[in-house]
Length: 106
Image (cartoon, rainbow, N blue to C red; front, side, top):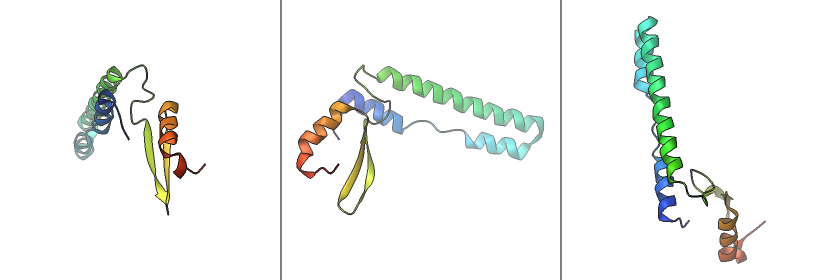
């Protein structure tokens, strides 16, 4: 699916979102007690901060015409010779219909 350069930037950034800190949670569980709880909670707080910062960065890349932080269209799979897509943008869906009208099934 074609995207403008700015859309590609935020779609790629969304695909590379930071994960949680599983190592800190495991260390907290192994240590146990109040210290383990502090380590586990600190790890969770760090992951939440990173996710919030990442989300803010994604939002800063959006244009008024953007419909979502992630992809504007998703390929959901196929069955035999029928492919299934979900579109979040009417203009994008209309262009897809125009370009593939003869092959579409409602």
